[in-house]
Image (cartoon, rainbow, N blue to C red; front, top):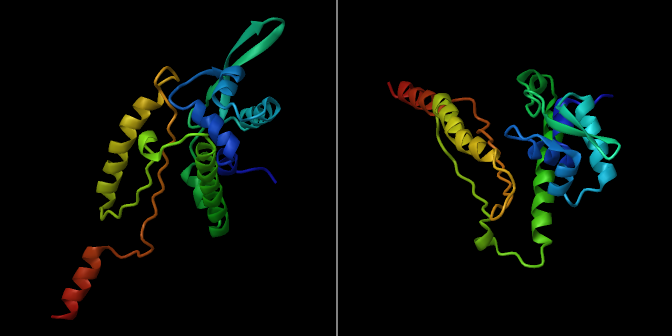
Length: 193
């Protein structure tokens, strides 16, 4: 059975490759390998090929280097996005499996961080927060837009002196209730009339 687009994206190694190409970055295999030093070269090639075959990344240039061809990759348009149609066709079990893969990726990232000889959660800016917000659909969409704009701006930053890669992940889980506060409030008001 062929992997869904979500399966392809949410594999821990492929997700890290995709993250290395976010913001319009164009990188060779060697440049990606320099960012993902803990991934063996053969494994990196295998996952690059899988992303390429699925058309999630594309080759934008090829350079001749000492008798071999060096490919330059970038994300394909909408390559890192799971479509609404993809999500609608999935069963609850498949959604849970994808969520577990996403969480496993976060656990892997945090595990790599903790394997350092010296780490300081405060100095390094490690943050784990959870907040409940009551928002209309319009307010929520505006919040997402407000959060995405500065992150996308900084996603274009290249590695350099003083810059440290920081993985910022968001998980939004709406309340399971389908009634809004105003619907419940109105119902309570109607009951008293």
